[in-house]
Each structure stands twice: as C-alpha cells, then as structure tokens.
Image (cartoon, rainbow, N blue to C red; front, side):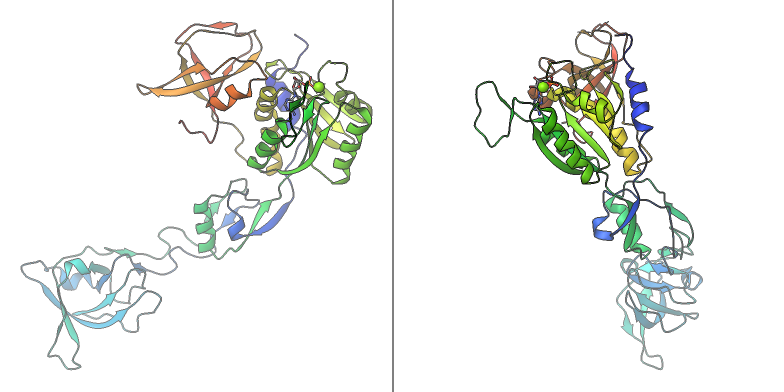
Length: 417
Ligand code: AMP
Ligand code: MG
C-alpha cells in the first residue's frame, strides 16, 4: 500500500489540471447560485439620495428642540412628499413637510419626526390656509434620515469574483442596475456508468443483475456542484462499446469525463486500460477507504476521473476529488469544505488508510457526538442515506477509543437534522 498516493497528493494532482471556465452573461433572475466571474463595483451611491426611514414630518431639528408631549411645537405643513416624488419646497424656520418612508428629504430639513410623535394636523389661520401640526418630540440631527451613500459609496468594491451569488446578492446587483451578470459557464461533465451487471431502474430485476444507482447519485451531485451533466448512459464491460461512449463525450466538447466502475483489478475492468491506450493515466489507486480504485488522467485531451463502482466509494470519491475539480472549473474561490470536530460515542477501528465513515452526528450538551451508521461496506448505500456526516479518520490511525475527537463533514446542506 505504500506506493499509493495519499488523498492530499491525489487531490492536488487532480485540481492542478483544471482551470476556471470562460465567462458568460446571464440575466439577473437566472444568476442566483451561479459564480460571479468579475469583481463588482458600485455604480451609484446607496441610498442614491437622502431619504426618510419613517413616515412622519421632515423638520429642522433646531425648530423643535423644546418639543415634548406636554409642550408641543407647532409647525406649518408646506407640502406632502410621497415616495418616488421630489420635494418642491425648501423647509424654512417654523416649517415642515409630511414625508413618507423612502421619499427624498427636502432641503433645509435635517431630521424626521415619526407620525407617532406628532398630533393631528389642524387648519391654521395663517395666510394661505395651510395646516399646522403639533410635534411632541425633539429629534437629534439626522434622526430617521438615511444619508446619501450611507450603505455604499459609488465606486466601492461590493462583490468579488469567485463568489457564489446569493439571493441577497441579486438584490444588491439590482440596486446598481446590473441586469446582466457575468458568471463562469457551467463545466460540462460527461457521466458514464459501466458494468454488465447494470440495468436501469425502469427494468425488472433479473438474476445476477443490479440496478444502476450511481448514475442518479452522481448526476445529482454534478448538478449540485455547478456542473452540466451529459449522460452517456450505461456501457457494458466491452472495450469497443466503452470507447464509443468516451468518443461520444469527446465529440460533445465536454470539460470532464466522469465514469463509475471498471477501474479495479478485475478481468473485465477495461476503463483504466482504455485510458492508458488512448490518453494518459496519471495515477490510479489512492490510499483511502472506501474508494481506493480511483483513476485519474486524460482520455484523448479531456480530463478523466474514474470513480470506483461501489456506490459509497463513488460518493466519497466524488466528495473528495470531483468537488474540488468542479469548484476550480466553476471559478469558486472558496473551495475548502467545512471540517468540524465531534466526539466518538463508541470506539472505532480503521486499517491505517485515510478512512471515511458514514456517521450520525448529533448535538448533545453543546457538543457534537458521532456514532457510525450501519455496516460500513462500500456497497451499503442505505447506511449512506441514513448518515448525516462522514467522519474522516487520518491515515496511520488504526483504532480510536470512545470519546476521541474526530473530524467530520456534514452531508446534505450542512445542517443537523
Ligand atoms: P467494479 O468497479 O466494476 O469492480 O464494481 C465494483 C462494485 O460496484 C460491484 O459490486 C459492482 O456491481 C458495483 N457497481 C458498479 N457500477 C455500479 C452502479 N452504477 N450502480 C451500483 N453499483 C455499481
Ligand atoms: Mg465491474
């Protein structure tokens, strides 16, 4: 086993080969979840003009510095400013304007008194028949005023390239009038499953056959991680047919070929041999469990990752090796998966390879505890569905007593259920 690559070395050799996809522009409503391809600078101030954060009266704070509930100050109401309309008048001493949330603060005013701190306006006897309103509160200068540029100044850097665009980001982009967003194009990933034993889920089960489960898990994982799936389907263990499928991938201009099975040492494991003949096999086999028979190289000129056939091995291999590659192709600048620590609820044994155990992690008394989920055979996809985490036992470790601290990755959206 000593000649096998470590997980870290294999990850490095894989990710080194990939680079970010070219950029494309998508409409704002399609941009959530995509990866931003350029830095975004503000193209206007936010807010773009000083405005009221309350429905109330725009005042000169100095005019009402004696105002209280017992002794209100009366101001002349010279106009009403709805949101979306500009003030027509300047506020002079003794004057105010009724203002709505989001409307521009009129010249002369320096504070807003919310409606709640004012009384019913009454008709005044002043010439012009205007209204007067009692003000019950002494505002500080700037109270309930959102100054121009308070949140963002024109020209400020607001979003950096490589960021996965959130719904909130869309709102920010919209605020700057950016309706076409430059994002990295989705990498195109051809997916091939191989094996004479495989039948599709639509077909009745036959003796000696199993249903192809990897196609579904892997396709969904590819899409979850920003890839576009090109389904090549199931190839039998037949050199010619496997080649035909791989050539089809080449003709479809894919960025990565991902295959499942056929890269082990069995008599009918042809995939690895084909890569060696018509491309280049950079390495196969990694010092890990599950997932040792992992092949990496090129088929013709296209990067190729051959995952093991066992469903859990294929899943773990995807998380460990394919996600970093997809992240790099996708232009994502933060690629490290969040590793957390948990305490073992029972002793465990490993074989000295870096091991990924299916586990259930719970929050108990403010700390994470982990226990293994089901039998750990690499075919046990049921245990994988029941687990909410993968424990990562470093290479060289053969046993860990109860209470040991271990690293884990949460599965399924990084949430505890
Ligand atoms: P192989 O890598 O071809 O030696 O396959 C290893 C194990 O994974 C065998 O038990 C296969 O039957 C199983 N297997 C291979 N491909 C799939 C698949 N697409 N879905 C489920 N199991 C598979
Ligand atoms: Mg096979």
